[in-house]
Length: 335
Ligand SMILES: Nc1ncnc2c1ncn2[C@@H]1O[C@H](COP(=O)(O)OP(=O)(O)OP(=O)(O)O)[C@@H](O)[C@H]1O
Image 1 (cartoon, helix red, strand yellow):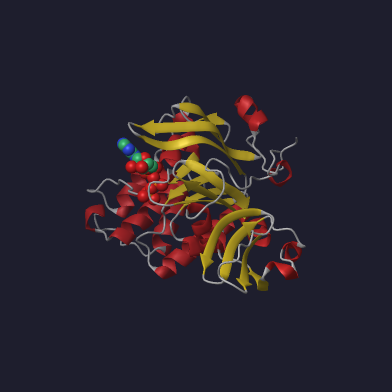
Image 2: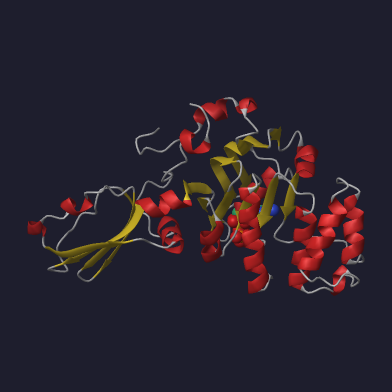
């Protein structure tokens, strides 16, 4: 633990060969990646436990796709190691890609094939159960089976890509913006199926800008900001431990210190002070004494979107300080 009670998996990073594939489906240790003058990823450490829906959030350009491309073996990090299902993402990239399902943000499909033909083609790479599952998915998604991919709509193409990625029932599914292009009914149906997958012991890494959707399905949320990992926490813990605290002052000019805890953001507007705070202690109200010019204080539970904006926007913390990490206990990893 560091001084902020934040778990940094240093011992695992020192010995990445010791990854237990039964518990940590993804293990990323000190990964950095730079493109010319852009530091796309800066010393990322992250562990994704088995049987979870793990949501990767971040603004445009935060580094999500770069991380996913490293995990899927399409991009070599400058520094650090990345393992998926116990395999090194670069040295054993073919094994990794065979064992996982992956849908990129811009899926490339053989345009001259129909949905049926592309499923038949892909079945050569997987087990005998693939064609049946693929056809069931295509049927459930109501994709026209005889139409060439080039003539399908954006949403229909996304459905074909999802069916191809999931029909071999992979242990890990990596999805980069999977629901863009899908209509609301299919989006909901698809995201609910991700929860079912996790309940069945499969793991899903989901990169998305649809924070409200993520909030419904994610077990663990990670927030990337400008190439740095700002936060990794189980969603229920995050929501339980984070509050928006508002203090109304007698006078707009009176200074009011924030409550204890990790202050993610601070907004001052007239007589009102508003903080988004994680790890807020139970007795936080005692921080606002009667003689400090504070007229009224209250707290509310923030939405994930409010937490996201607080983490990525106005942040008074040290720039390279992550808010919180998952404990050994929550990961099921022995210390
Ligand atoms: N091939 C490349 N060459 C140069 N810079 C790149 C390249 N790919 C990505 N970048 C830069 O790296 C940073 C991270 O990009 P990345 O695509 O990983 O972000 P992202 O979080 O996936 O963004 P978005 O949500 O917009 O898809 C951005 O500043 C981007 O401009």
